[in-house]
Length: 305
Image 1 (tube, rainbow, N blue to C red):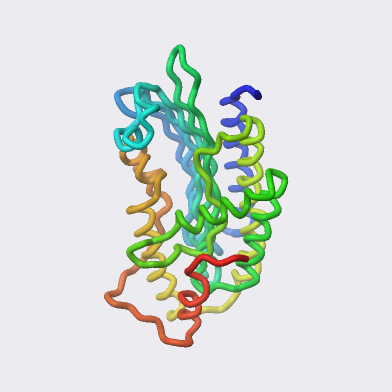
Image 2: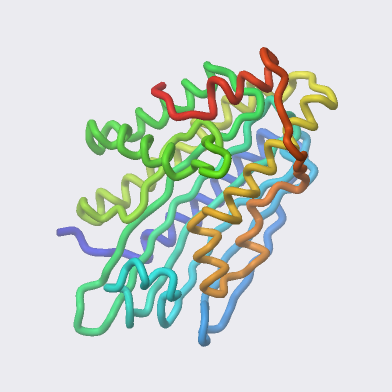
């Protein structure tokens, strides 16, 4: 059985953050990521640190962030141990890269990606560890070819790890990024997985490498195809309305957001995923047969690609 190597995971995650930031800056062509490095001394709650990187007012991206964090705690939040009693009494470490990019142009989808590693240890006992992550796409004016390409990349990167992996993690993504109070998915899905430890450590680690590095391969060609399409106030207002769904999901259902806030994490970094502008409208209805209606009719429900 391959040995657990926390330092190798941390090094990869920091290099992944660097690589993704460089590629996004190149596509934007105007804005750069501003880094806010932070550190907390160990105490009653989370210790550790990270590098929060935020891009604002770009030519392509209105706002976005690519965060790296590595935190440690003496004990898990009660909300976690209630579901995983074996974690009680263990100190833990969590590290990961998490990103969300909110584009200016409504024809460019919002995207999210995350890869992370968790380990809980107790003297005299075997460590409990797992990987998690994935990526998903949230279009406002979706294009069939873009969604197909996004999923084709996901299928390709999953293939070396088993014929069943894409189908399982695609279905998990559809289920996870679902807003039950709206009866719709957040977008067109992608991959999502958690508690990944059924393979040896090295194979699990290789999988998050593939997912992390596959994000820009899947997203940037879509950005390039759509970033120069002309749009008006109608499209902008619909984009802002649909961003409201993003906020609803992140604040009500997202595990990473809830874990971070409940464990005393750094609020500014946790809420980096929020869009800079969003709106809500009472009893909004799309016009039948409109491009906006197509999003609801054909894309906000699980489907095979």
